[in-house]
Image 1: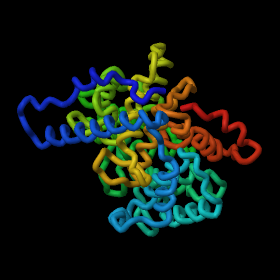
Image 2: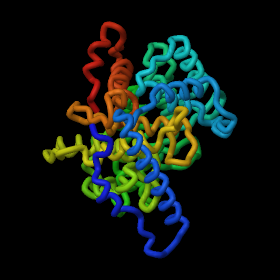
Image 3: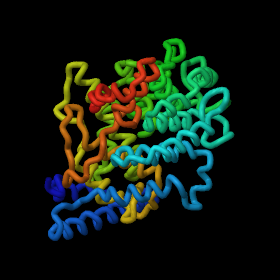
Image 4: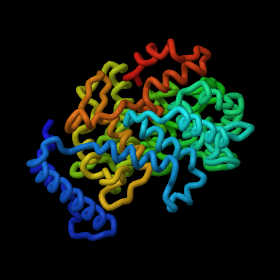
Amino acid sequence: MALFTRNWKDIEQNLFNDEDIETLTSVEQINVESNIKRLYQSLGSRCRIDNSLPKLIAAEHEKYLKQCLTYLPAGYVNLDASRTWMCYWIVHSLSLLEVELPEQQLSNIVDFIGKCQCPTGGFGGGPSQLPHLATTYAAVNVLCIIGTKKAYDTINTVGLQSFLWSLRSPEGAFSMHRDGEVDIRGTYCALAVATLTNIATNKLFEGTAEWIVGCQTYEGGFSGCPGMEAHGGYTFCGLASLFLLNRVRLCDVKSLLRWLVNRQMKYEGGFQGRTNKLVDGCYSFWQAASFPLLHKFLTEDGCEPDDVLFNRAALQEYILICCQHYDGGLLDKPGKPRDTYHTCYTISGLSIAQHSLNGKLYILGTQNNKVAETNPIFNIKPHLAMKAVSYFSGQGVFESDCCQVEEAEGST
């Protein structure tokens, strides 16, 4: 495939115009576009020597992630309450890069996650920390990615369900932790872990879909709670939650789709999180993952789109050319430092851009740039989500059944 699939003469017309009114935001936008333009021009020159560009430097990313799994720089000390998150960001990124960790190391990770579990249910960000829905979601995802019997059995499902009930509001929303803020993230995290571990009930999520729809704004996206601004992360949480509840039809799909398509930056190729904000690598997943979900909904509704509704080539250009650190790890945008969070969600966005619902791959560059498929609802590999649901429903998928779950690869 050719390096650039977009008409750059047309794209140049989409450079930001501040209309002679300079603001901090306009200056930042112009600087970002300038940095990205230099990267695109530089790579275009280097392609005359190496036509395999752009390249996913997977080996460097693997090295960086493995190092972070055992040793983190001092700057991460302020994330002590997010250690389960860091496990997820690292383990999931390695999973998408098709890197297999040694059994003993995986067992050690399971042991650590187990120490983060509260005796009464739910997981904290670290050992002896209070349980939190976000870190519970991260912990459950890690255990489902590892996918061993030991990993599954680490989850106290009875305690987990009790924990979810303790966070439920009368309207059907969920607070992030005991006496914490109520927002759409909590609702998504509760639905995701309850679905994977087979503890969801109609009573537990009664009224939840209606509360979620109340978070859809006049723009079309979803906010954290009713009356706030539409945001990419919240929009993903809202749409994924409605999918899990089979209630997508309750929201204004047309308005949502209009908002989403306008979040892909015409020049940069990546996504912004909110209207009039800068591009950010993490929204490669948070925004792009909503498109296959909407594609599936529209198809089942008899209105199958011709494509996945966003420019997959442009997103891959942004990720591969602008978001890779030369020494491994991915980043928000040129000039920003690498970190495990952006590594996880930028690689996840690359996966979404490469894999389509009809099973056909769309890869910018060579086949060496391919990453594994991720489930756009849970953001773990599709067969790992199916395997977990099967295990917790009492069917137990191990060894002889592995060939069956592989058939689930590619399903939403």
